[in-house]
Amino acid sequence: MEIDLVGESIKFMILGMTVVFVFLYVLVQLMKLQAYIIDTYFPDPTPAPPPAPKSTVEDEKARVAAIIAAVAEFRKTKSSSKG
Image (tube, rainbow, N blue to C red):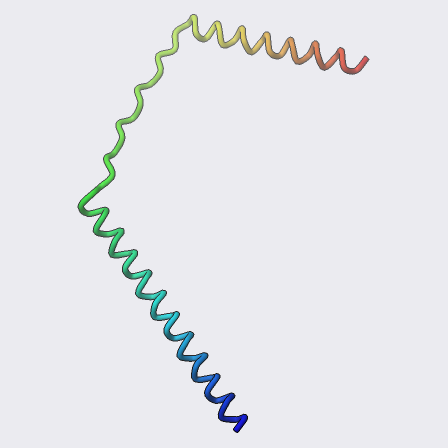
């Protein structure tokens, strides 16, 4: 009698695992089909590349001045924290 229970449990286990495997396989295939349909009928518009920024000499001078000021401030705070 106990051997029957083990055999039945193995059958149910195999049946359950097969049902889950088939369900997941069908789910993956449906998701692929859905992605194909969406890409076919609703393609993503390709965005236009943003225009290149026009940097002027004044912008470069301001950028260099900001970098120099930041480095000077960093050095000032670094040296004051040592002493």
